[in-house]
Image 1 (cartoon, helix red, strand yellow):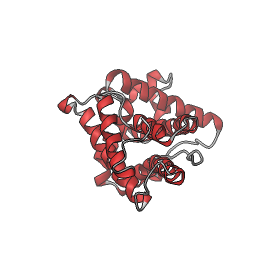
Image 2 (tube, rainbow, N blue to C red):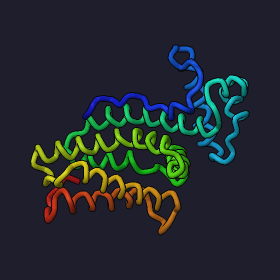
Image 3 (cartoon, rainbow, N blue to C red):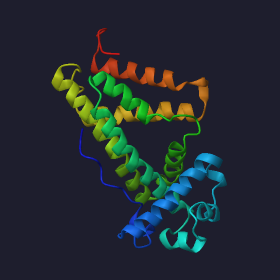
Image 4 (cartoon, rainbow, N blue to C red):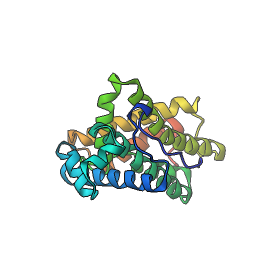
Length: 221
């Protein structure tokens, strides 16, 4: 797998507070953890700055010292959780033998755990803002890059080992496949067609086999 990704921060124009110190970073992390906990428990519409401050055992003024707005907190919470998830995902994938099993696990990590997955809710909030902000769009691209890098690494390994047929340009494949996963994720989040998580993973794996092992019936489960 590639090296752990550097932590991505929200656009520079939104940053605030001396997070370069350990104490400053710990304070920011407390706020972000509180925000994620509240989103998980009550939903994003119920999250207020005062509630985040209370959960973090800080004043609203202290929260605003580090963050410019609720939107800024939401973007930073997404980046904070993605950074942790990237490190955990890469450590787990490195222990899995067999590229088909790695790909299956990668898909499982990518798709939402439930229709109320808090990280996916944050992704959707960011998506809604991206068309109106080049900064937010670039921020999201930076968060997505580790996912595409990990997928590209799995595909490259599969081609090298002879388990996959080379899909042409790997970057084009990762773009297509991530778009497929996004579509399946939205089906899950919108609860359309009662698409289960198991079925979504199965559909994604079928699509991968069709492109990476066309005509083969003997791929790994």
